[in-house]
Every structure is written in structure tokens, then in C-alpha cells.
Length: 118
Length: 418
Picture 1 (cartoon, each protein chain N blue to C red):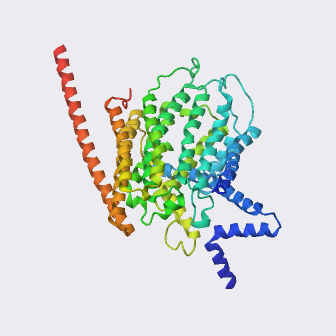
Picture 2: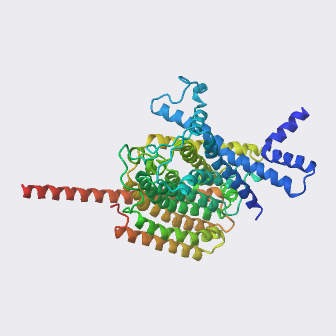
Picture 3: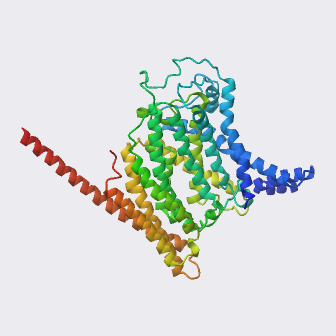
């Protein structure tokens, strides 16, 4: 079992090399002529106003909350799906009930207007 | 003749035989025990790692050429500066150009995540390939982890953090908005993707990629077309292909999270995008098209690799068609499509498929024939699609009525005002 992960470890080095090599090569080859005007953040030709790290109205946060429900659910459902073939019928129905509860939660969020884009 | 026969026998199972040959050479050279196998595996890792890179180099050319022909342009060709016949060397020229370009670094960036993001984005998409089976048995090059598809999920969702790193560290408003959108989109579409994968895992009974392929006596695209559809739409969003291309959105966000990257660092994001679409095609092939399975694979295992690559090419071609022809969705349409259509559909699909499949197993105590099982699952899927169709038609009519009522009320108000 563990020796299968040796390949993953080897690929780790190859992937790191593939990721790091082109930027490193570019770092050696490219010209370096920095200028303060070049370094301004791109804002379609207008002088940048303030910095970008300000508080945004992140409309996505309710979506993120709903996502949390489903992501935690996955932790429970993967083992269930894996042993599904050996489960008796009632255990499968229990899993389905759990999923329907989640669907209920989604419908609740929907009816509450959490899924509307504002 | 004798030599020819031996050559054919060697080529028929080329991947395993080349591995054995190298290992034999190393053993004969007198290397102590773990090293020959380790070196063979390392060569395998290099092949697997470079495979997406080499595919992508030609895929970028093919994509530009095909998209140009579909839009009535010529695309890269050899007029002007010579770039090979049909401009086939265009990608190499672009790569060289990007490497020797100056790297313009904006003021006020956060240097560590800013420089790490382009490295990690390629890293994550190469790591996906560890569990992709290229062929049957020992000819899979990679490894057959018992958590196969879970491993893929882990590395494909890593892209989200990398996009956030790139967008947030760039000190640019467009990049920050692009990063927020990346979070909303990738996080959202992970759910239907996950539920579709759960359906496949439940029916196949394993998370091993080879196991999933072995379970497909009838390919899952035929047995569970709805699951395949859900998975495909979700992966289109995960690799931000055109209908869900909101992270980049050239005309509104200029480039989204990587607007401040230039030179090779920009090239890395571009590369990773194509690499991901190839990886996703490979995953779709494995999960729904039966991977390397095809005629005569038991005679010549190398044919398995050929079938796999051909199926993968078809999936990539479909991705290209969608990417080139469709316009971009609006952000609320994108979120609605996911949360109000794809996710509920995926949950219902999972419940129904799991119940029906269990029912089939109970009804045939001696084990159901593959085609019977597939036929019943297919019929269930068709029924489900019809029901969903009916419901959405009802919903549409209701929305229409409400809009008409609203318009009537507006007109009435205007008349009172006048």
C-alpha cells in the first residue's frame, strides 16, 4: 500500500521541477529594467487609487456557508459510497435520507433567499 | 521472421516490457536491491509528468488553429515569420518569447504568494496525473492508489487556493475581484462534481481508478448519462472553460486573478489552464468512457493506451467546441445554474441511482447481467430527465406569469401617475 505512494513522491519532485524550471529559466534570461512607472498596478490607464486590500462586499459568503454543509457531508458520504455494495437495503435508505435532509437544507436556504445574487 | 515476431510481442505490451528491460539492465549492472525498481518508477514519473506538457504544446496550437477555422480566420500559419508548416511551431515561438520577456512586478505586492502561485498552479495540475491509468495492469505507468479519485479531487480543488493566492497578492482591484469570483465558482461547482463522483464510486464500489474501469462492462456514459452530464458541466466550470469563464472575463475583469502577471509567470497560468483541461478529459474518460477498455486489449495491452488517448482526444475536442461556440454567462446566472439546478439535480440523481442500483442487486440474487443493470439505470435516468424537464417548464411558466403581472402593475402605476 505504502509503496504505491513512492510514485506520488517521485512525481512530486518532477512536478515541482516542471513548475519551478520555466520561471527560473526566465529569471536568468530576461532583461531587468525596473522603472517606477512600469510597476504601477494595472488599472486601465488611470492612476491607481488606494490599494486593493480593502474590505469588499463579498456577496459570496452565504454561498460559502451553504458550501460548508455539503463539504462536510462529503466526508460522511465517501465511506458510505465505498462500502455501498456490501450494505443491506436499509443502510442505503438511511444514506438517502441523510442526503434528502441536505436537500431540505438547500431548499430552505433557497426559500430564505440566500441563493439570490444581490 | 523470428525477430519480427519477437519485436511484435515486445511492442504489444511495450510499456511493461520497456520497464522490465530497463530494470533488467540495472539489475545486471549490479545495483543493490531497491534501486532498479526505484529508478524505473522515477523514469515513469518523468514520463507521466512530461506527458501533459507535451500534449499541451500541441493542444495549444490545435486549439488556436481550430478556433480560428471555426471563426473564419486562418490562425497561426507560416506567413510572415516562419513558424513551420501550418504554424505548428507557433507554441514554441510563444514559449521562447515569454521566457525572454521582462517580468514587470507591480508595487506593493506580497512577494511570496505572488511568486509561488505560478509555480504551484502547474505543480498541482501535474500531480493529478499520478493516478490516471494509461493502460491495463502494469501498463498504467502511474500508480493505482486505493483512494484514486479522492486524490484527484484533493489536487483539483487546490487550484482554488492558488487562484486566491495569485489574485489577492497582486495588489490589483481586478485581480482581487477575480479571486473572489474564483472562490465562488470553484467552491460551488465542486459540490455537483463531488456528488457525481460519489454516484460513480457507489455503483463501481471502489475509488481505485482501475477498479472503476473494471466495473464498466457497460460504459457509465450509457448507464448513467445524467451523472456524466452533471460531472461534465461541473468540470467545465472547474477548468473555467468558456460558458463559465468568469474568473478571467477578458472584457470585464481584463484577466481576473492573473492580470498583474507578465512574462513566463503569465505563461505558467496559461499552461496550467490547458493542462487542467487535458487532465479533466482524462478523468472523464476514466470515469465514464471506460478508460483504456476497447477491443483487442487482452491481445495487445498497448492498444489500451491507444484507445485511452483516442477517447481523451474526443473529450478534448468536445471541450474545444463548447469553449469556442458559447458566450460567457453572467455571474448570477452562473451561481443560479449551480445552486438551483445542478446541485439539487445531483443530489436527487445520487439518491435515485443508489436506490435503483441496490434494487437491481436485490432483485437478481445471482448477480444482474451487465446490460440489464445498465438498461434499468438508463431508463431511470431518462425518466428523471423527463420529470426535471416538466418541473423546469412549470417553473418557467410561473416566472413568466409573474413577470407579466409585474409589467401590468408598472403600466397601471404609470397611468395613475400621468
